[in-house]
Amino acid sequence: MNLKFSLYILISGVIFFSCHNEEKAVDAKATSRTLPNIIIIYADDLGYGDVGAYGATQLKTPNMDRLAREGLRFTKGYAASATCTPSRFALLTGVYPWRNKDAKILPGTAPLLIDTGQITVPKMLKSKGYHTGIVGKWHLGLGDGHVDWNKHIAPGPNEVGFDYAYIMAATQDRVPTVYIEDGFVAGLDPSDPIEVSYEQNFAGQPTGKANPELLKMMWDHGHDQTIVNGISRIGYMKGGESAKWIDENMADTFLVRAQQYVKAHRSEPFFLYYALQQPHVPRTPHARFAGSSGMGPRGDAIVEADWCIGAFMKTLESLGLLENTLVILSSDNGPVVNDGYKDDAVEKLGSHTPAGVLRGGKYSLFEAGTRVPFITYWSGQIKPGVSDAVISQVDLLASLAALVQSKEGTSDSRDFLSVLLGESQSGRDELVLEATSRTALRKGDWVLIPPYPGPAKNTSVNIELGNSIEYQLYNLHDDLSQQNNLANSNPEKLKEMMDTFQKIRGDYRDTEALELK
Image (cartoon, rainbow, N blue to C red; front, side, top):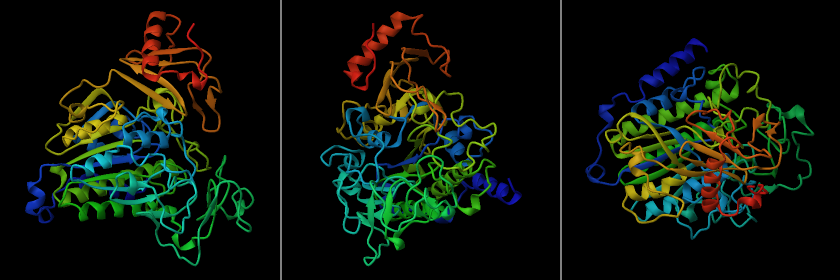
């Protein structure tokens, strides 16, 4: 790491919560309110071991570490799924994703996954007087599946509770590669209309597969279709040149929008869902972060994300909002190193372990698929500490409803507000975990993974999936890395776990799991 960037990181960590007295004047309306602001900062593919507070030593994440040190760091915090769309669905709706057969990784042209009549976190908070906003990654579908990207795009975030939305439609590696603001493509020239297809290419449009000489980042598996900004994507796109994003500017673009949002709404209760794109592929950190981690673009993107979090928290401080704002930081699923581009993530990983001591990663039923960094921070309200309570992102709807005294809820989401605030260590006793339509059960310290057909490992990304022809039973208290399968040696516990699993999950055998003999 060069000296200039080392000093930059050091300074950013020191000034995270530095005093800006001259900027702390807040009007009487803001200081008199009783409803706290609520912010969810949601990383994309950030692993349990990618953060210093969770054991990373090769990567420097001073701003996330500061939140963990001055807030509450959960050691057993879970995303609802080991992939992004299902986790985002659960976070916003309080419903397990396996209850919705369409809650899978969506293409960029998928229809809106959330029913517009469904209760959501932003809807619930709007009913209590909150202004609601989303900035960043959406990936929950748009429209009815037949979107004209040149007109108003609906239904979308605005129709499920967000007053303001500045998003990317799906993921950074999928078309359309444009930002959408309140249902309209930002910066679109009507004379250059957008066309999108996931079936066939448009005449004359180069692709990564046919034109590798045009690429600045080579694809590895998939991701070889339309080229935008020197990077080939999933899907085909034509037109919309003035609206296309520049990948290297994406983190700054979302940060500025998030900062503008809190500045505009600081005098009223607000909810902001700030959904980062890092470190999802393609990893395209701004040039000022290039080489900052020594691990290639994946590590640099995590350093960039940490800096964005620090800059955003500094904005909250300068506005005098820290004492009246609950911040929740987490990730949508576990880590993946090689996920479709040749970006030196594997070659430069060194001794860093993105999953920490956990087994598996993104796409996996093992712990690293869904156990993720999970931090709550509220200056003056949450005492610094560590919580070993089991908590899931599916519980945020009910817990935040309790915070604002709303009676809205779902059968899956449970009120663990006292756990989020550090007032209790009594979290979930049982939790259904999910990965690509397969489900498992955590109960107490035990995890059950039923038999599933299919490969044991996804060789493209080099991650164990948790599939086996046998039942798997692990005691996480004694075996956090899930190395010792106790299914055969402890049949009583296995049957107890299966009985609980079937009561919650119902007929899980639609995923072709084998019957318990």
